[in-house]
Every structure is written in structure tokens, then in C-alpha cells.
Length: 117
Image (cartoon, rainbow, N blue to C red; front, top):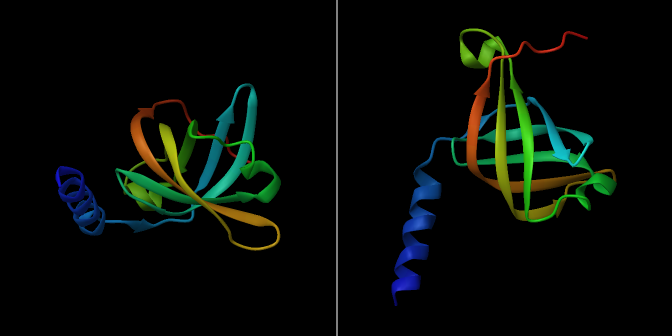
């Protein structure tokens, strides 16, 4: 009974959390490897992002990633947010891309400047 109540609270929290539809660059860090992706939406508790299907197989339960938020989003300066996440689900978005929903376990705002290409 307690488990059901907890699940109901979690579902309500998920629905109440404001999600931002943001198409921002995301880099998954697996050991020394950096895997590119991009976000579909982002909140302070979770993220949904896309990456190559072949790379999605490298992401296990817990992983680290960096999201680069442009000045238009932060209404200030560009910033990088380093996060530790946990995979909630993976979905095949297309032949080439997979979608990943992840819970954000913790994060820190990085002060180093973003690279300009």
C-alpha cells in the first residue's frame, strides 16, 4: 500500500514539474569518450534527449552528461551544466536516433566558457 501511494506522488510530481522544450547540445561522458546528443526537453529533475542508436547502447543505468544552455535560454550568459543521470527508458525515435528519458540525480553549473565553433 505504501509503494502505491509513493508511486502516485511521484506521478503527480512529474506532471507538476515545469518542462522546457529546449533543443540544446548535450554531451554524454562514458569514461574518456564523449558522445554527442541534443535535448528535446529539460526540467530540474529530468531530461529527454536524442543520440545515435549505436551510441545509445553504451549508456547504462547511471551516466554523466553536460548540457550547454545558450544565452537565449538562461537570459544571461551561456552556461554548461554537468549532470549525473539515471536512465528511465530508451525509445527508438527513428532508424538513426534513439530517445532517452533520464532522471537528473544531481547537477552543478560549470563556469568554464563554451567553445565557439
